Amino acid sequence: MDAPPSTRRSPALIPRERGVGLRRIAIGTALGRVVVRAGRRADGPATILLHGAAGSWTTWTPLLAAADAASAPLTDVVAPDLPGWGDSGTLPRGTDVGAMSDAVVEIARSLGYTRWRVVGHSLGGFIALDLAARHPRETIAVVLVSPSGAGVVDALRPRCAEARGCPDSPGCCSRCACSPDWVRRGGCSSAHSIASVRCGRSPHRSSPGRGRCTDR
Image (cartoon, rainbow, N blue to C red; front, top):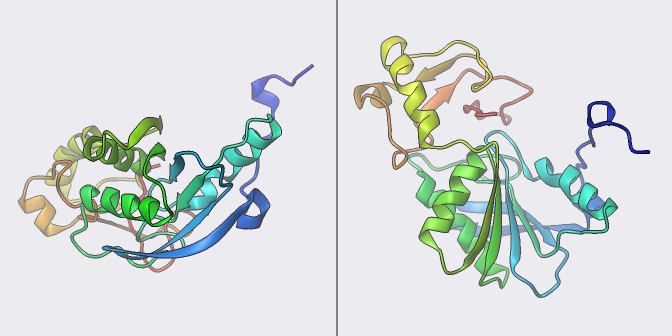
């Protein structure tokens, strides 16, 4: 008999791409060099896996392992370290969600894919929705896992406008402080820069040397 969900042990992250049948590739995009783990080619549409802020491609390794164990392996996997996180280069200043989704499309096309399914967690969910809206014909499906979006930004706007910061919470790492430009604008909409919030650094959540906000 299977153990009840509450007693099952959570699968561990797998830090090496070979452990899940992928290979490491560096791809040039308009946002700079992006490191991608890709593989399991089956001549189908891509399965694009987009991690959340301060995450990396390893976010998806428990899913890949669980699917393998269930005899339902994911194929044609494309799992980038989004620009600014993981092994990829620094996120260019002023980057918005549209630029991030365009970079993901560049990656998929450079690997030979013309259609894709997109799975996004947290910030990755925000990017997945934007990508699907920009490329509806190429996007077969979108799967969202605890996604963030414009509603999260709108919820934070009043607090940041008043205090130019926000206390520790499940939605941000350490103490967050809005940039002066962001406050002068009275917050930001989904079309504005996703890099307009800077945060205090939290070693277990923020990527080395960047100290950006997490939205887990």
